[in-house]
Image (cartoon, rainbow over all chains, first blue to last red; front, side, top):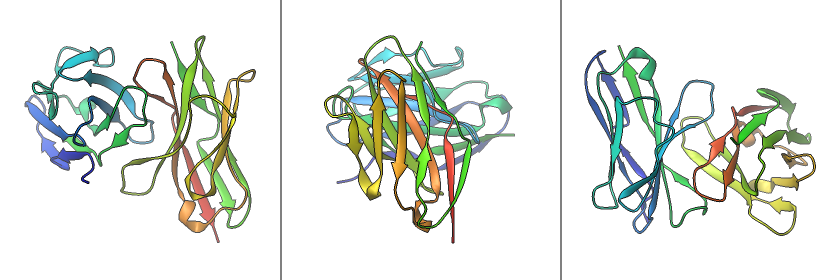
Length: 113
Length: 112
């Protein structure tokens, strides 16, 4: 079956613009996670969903970042007024239940110029 | 709050030599422990996990890790590495409740 799909694979945007990053999890996986990975660093937790609701959004760095999962499947990470410091690879992962191993997508590389 | 420390940022090793990648975590509660591997230009893949039971865990590609509760460590080992093991390795901890917290990563470079 298909793995976790993230689109776009690359996104270049200008400082101050709004971006949306999409994640399509493995079918049937109820838990969905967003991470951010900067060069030379480990993935940094942003938010995770159990079904449609955000179970833990403690990793979102500020109110410019927001994520939704309206139907409990596809999720969108939204970043307003992008800054150069937002440049990173944004990773999405899903799991069948909480605490089961995460399956990661290949990420979206965001570059803010 | 939980944290994970990978003590070596880079580990160079010759092919067929043994390797150990070190990982320590801080947590006051029970945790699950994981090692993930990231090959160049690929996504993260699960190598192995410790949830409960035997403290020696075997994973894919000949890797194994040992959970040591008293030392709060979860070091990754392989008795004989191959060129194809060259990758970034991440240790991660999950409290009994969802999210994974990752270490900074260890770059394993296997030389012929």
